[in-house]
Image (cartoon, rainbow, N blue to C red; front, side, top):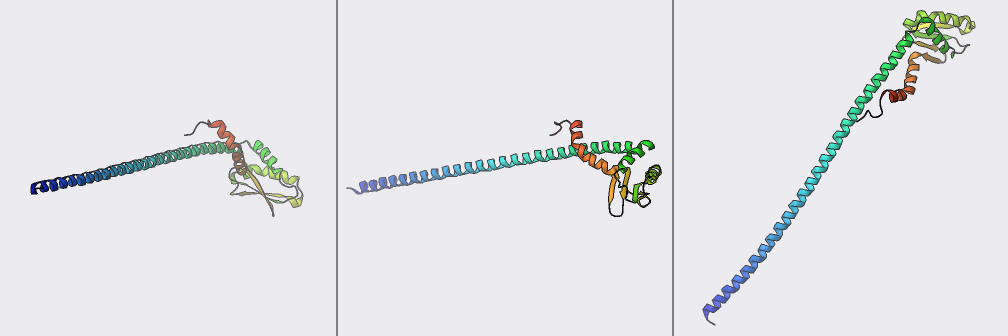
Length: 199
């Protein structure tokens, strides 16, 4: 074998080995690039999904917040209307002619024990018109069970509060309206406000 042939064989072998090394390096490079591409795509999909879920959650939160605000506003309006209805009802009772008002308060005063003495508290403006009722009641009560009409800060709307030494009986229009509002508010709300008034 001549030197040229040996050299050509060595060069050819070197080229084949270089080509094989280059092919392996290219395959490794391609594999790494494919892995990187997959990793980037997966990371993008994960981040996109996270962002989509976050946006959906924020959107749901915003809608729920708006709905809660709207429902609170509706509730406030409903309560304001109910308050106004009861305020007008209280004003109508308080503005009754004296004889009707005395009959009404007289019926309430029937709950006062006949043998108990005490104060009959009333609003300042009612003292004059309730005086005949208290005089009439005292005429039928024993000397130790007399009533004393006392203008006071409460009740404010109307009616009376009977205060004895050891107990008190609230016969005020104030407390009756509070109790009536609690009892009737749901029914009145159902009548006045349609069930579909909501978000």
